[in-house]
Image (cartoon, rainbow, N blue to C red; front, side, top):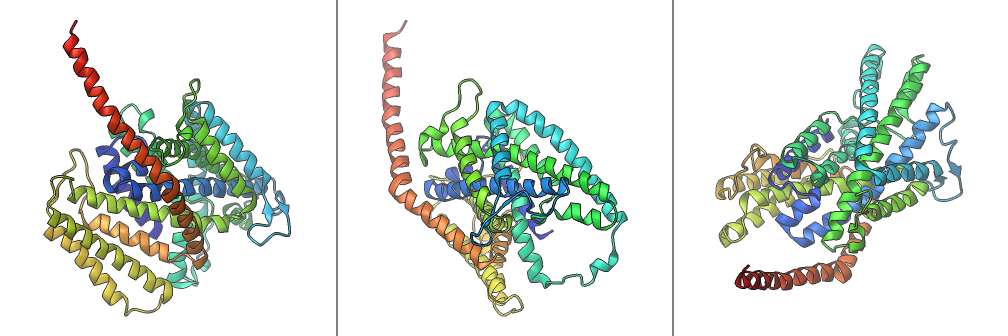
Amino acid sequence: MASGLSAMLSVFCYTEFAIEIPVAGGSFAYLRVELGDFAAFITAGNILLESIVGGAAVARAWTSYFTNLLDRPSNSLRIHTNLKEGFNLLDPIAVLVLAIASTIAMISTRKTSYLNWIASAINTIVILFVIIAGFAHADTANLTPFLPYGAEGVFRAAAIVYFAYGGFDNIATMAEETKNPSRDIPLGLLGSMSIITYTNIDPDAAYSVAFQSVGMKWAKYLVALGALKGTTTVLLVGALGQARYTTHIARAHMIPPWFALVHPKTGTPINATLMITICSASIAFFSSLDVLASLLSISTLFIFMMMAVALLVRRYYVRGVTPKANLLKLIILLLVIIGSSMGTSACWGLNPKGWVGYTITLPCWFLGTLGISVLLPKQRIPKVWGVPLVPWLPSLSIATNLFLMGSLGYEAFVRFGICTGVMLIYYVFFGLHATYDMAHQQEKQEPSKIDEDASARNEGP
């Protein structure tokens, strides 16, 4: 419920951007327009991280459900080694599944869509069965104790499973292959969000085991088959969307432009698909699902938080129109909102039972949001549809995303910090120069185009 609410607020932000800026590239393109190249690059790095780790996590879950479908012991299809715990179960099946999914995505976008439609239909039937049969065999004794790990356990679990909601942002990358992106992309975003169900509760395929425990052994296989269909759909959609994210990032020269090339026969970004698949397969082969889930969730939450910030900037700032005094106010108030949200998250992470810190952070968040609402006039009004209750809902999205980030463990932040450090080093030494050179080259080309057009008009017929 907590993660679903946070994700729905993020969907609102995505939907407004998809209507107002119906271009390929999803959150990377939106953030580059509103917040500039640096914010877009950090987000791009997290998008690539999310794509790679997400594919690996789903592929590992696919192996778990396949093992359950074959009625074999947990981890029996993985290779046991003496490596560190969390990296000691090698998974060649996950590598194979990733390779098959990416191959299908590289062959044809249309065929992949058909396969997704069939798999989604089957998965929906299985989900309905799980809901109905689950209620029929529910044991109220399991509700006691209702919160065995307290509120801390609830929010930690919500933060870990948050990446289950991350797939909808792939829809926003498909604008170039959509007939009417300003209409179809928002419908796809809201529609996908309304039916998202998290099926990978743990690596041991818990739904299947649950039905077996109440005597419905036949249902165990049905649920495992449906889960396989669901994870297969996620892999196919991921192979499509993640490659298009990578393509758009490469077009901006933030990574080598070779990854932006599209195959002339299939019309798909094969180079980008191969890069994501090879990296995902390498991680899936070694890393367990619990190691991947926290890193993936923190990356997803960061991207969604940035989207909410970008929406506030879009509504209250227009370059060349907004007075500098109002821009300064906006920056200060955004820092108050983000800082107070981080403070609330830190208070919760360090001392979940404490309350003194909240008496400072929550009023600061409220005053920062109120300040934007009262002190700053809106510079843009959406033409078709926009997020309601601005700035309150985007500000709440910032707060909830940062709060859930604070619910994750220490190790997740260490891994996230290392990945972010690598991104910054790459940006300073490579990405910054590449984007500058590209912008400088475009500036040179524009005057030459104008001169060519003028000479053509002077020559006449």
